[in-house]
Length: 338
Image (cartoon, rainbow, N blue to C red; front, side, top):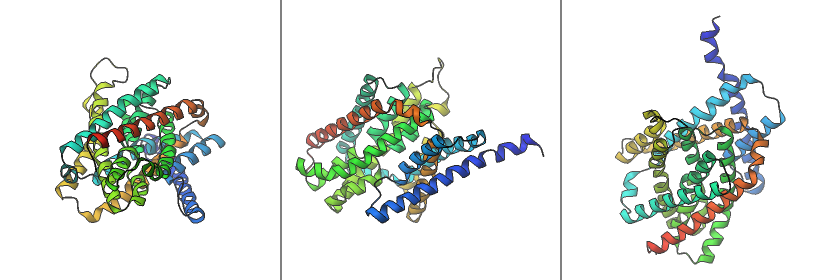
């Protein structure tokens, strides 16, 4: 047997199997949550990270698991970002008018810049600050997943950013309906506010459910416009972050393949060339790949190094979230949303 031919094909298998095992455990725990509490307080994505970190912390993993863990944390994550493009329709965005799109874009840009400044003020590393800023301001875990390979972020930074933003995302979903009532939002305003502040599309659906169908529809649309900002932000980061090199980064770094794939799928969805019957299967595959990649990220993290930065990261994410909520309220007032 020729090891030069055989090893590259088989080396990832143990790590991939371990990632799948952790993924299965996260789904089981989520089912138990639903069975006993009526809802999943922590989604499988967050649970996969936590379980992966627990396995890495409690068990001495053999080096043979490393290739598969790296494959799951990078390639599967990038494929999941590509599939996210199938859920974005440019037609739906264009139908809402330029002012709404411009307002949302302004909120995202201001939030990214201000969140980054907050993180750096709290002495967080440059790459983690960018991850938190983009995750809070655009679309949570998906934004972190897309930005990480462009800026060369390590697995520990990615896992820490996702873990904290995901947990706070759950708290936002719970608190948002109560906050909206105190602020006196109308049904439409509630949807816009949720779309501007909640991290993930499923969380928007959960947060706006109490506001009725109109809130759900408006919140989802606003959220998708935020998701659309992911492409331009990643492109700008690719142009401005050179990973310490003095020369211009290659085209693949400036415009990564998975962002091109995201835009292509969005174009196919918007043009109607992507059949509607594929929406559910694509969404399911994307969800599964994302959870597997989160398990891989967790398995690649030394939980003690994350804990050392925990207080500062928590403070940065919390302050960034409060800032995002303030910008959301200001946008509703300025755009005269009724």
